Length: 430
Image 1 (cartoon, one colour):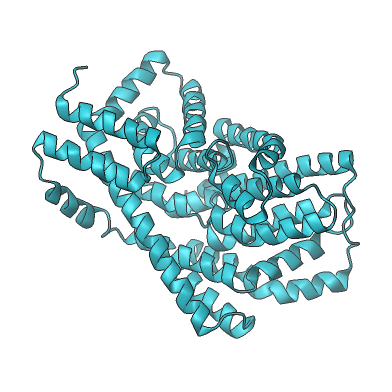
Image 2 (cartoon, helix red, strand yellow):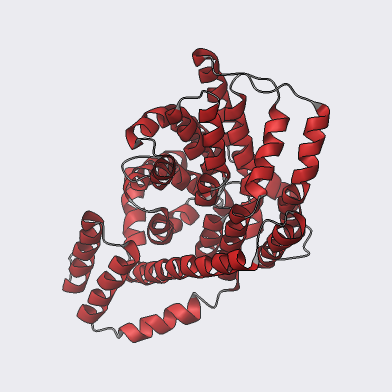
């Protein structure tokens, strides 16, 4: 392959933004503009293409709606109610609060679809309670970091929305495909928590009391109904996934104001402003990545990647192994949005050539990227939890390692047993 000047500028620029840790959106935009100028392409035409082809897509409207829902849930008392319900549910088992952490994340994931929202909301409440009851600080943080990854795998899921936009896969099938893997992730984490809790003799949970459980359930019921309304609306055909995002946002406001009465107009305004800021950042990243992907496609990088990998082997199971390992390594160094919007388009043609189901691949790759949020040196969830709890990063990393291995086991289970992902979509969509 001969490198022309514009493409050489493109490669050098991309390497520079990764090495220098330039904000990824600004770095990709700058690299793309330099490429267009060197190639004699009007950047204005590309900007018009981004606006007309990308931001006019109906499905992308769901992203700010789910972001807004997550912020309302974290600002109101929903996190407290979810924690209370999970705590009453677990009963008297050793390491009960660790299990509460995971169950709380699973429930919360059905409301927000965001790992960051989970870690910074109900997760921090759980860390505080675990430390108060004698759990090691590093272990409490590690459970919170890894359980937060369930959020974008179990529906709804913001990364799956982006993947559906890129691949053309059904967002409804993706959401449904994430249910069993999300539950498997919870089980895998809870198995290790049970083991380490018995080994370290962490405290027993509170005895299960039916009346306490019913009271906690009653208090949490409006919050617990969120995923039921959301997913029920989608799979009954009453609403589209985008409309479900609007429904979730409206329902979040109702329970925050009318049910729990934990939010005022001032707080709502802060949530709206914060959502606008987050959406602006996401839009910049998505637009920059779309431009970047246009260049990648123009230079026929996906075909080169496909030819290179097929030159190694044409066995799809071996190629799935290679893709998983490559993306796990990328997740250690690169932001998940960049992986999703830049690197996934490079392998999608290969995935289609091999006849790999797009729903199966989508759930697999989202779980892969969520593991990337927990792995050093640049695991975002590690920094968030460490920053909020003031627990040293190295302590959390050490305690997280076995839990991350448990998640990787689940990743390879769903990779090589596709029915773990496809059973429910095939049941309802075939």
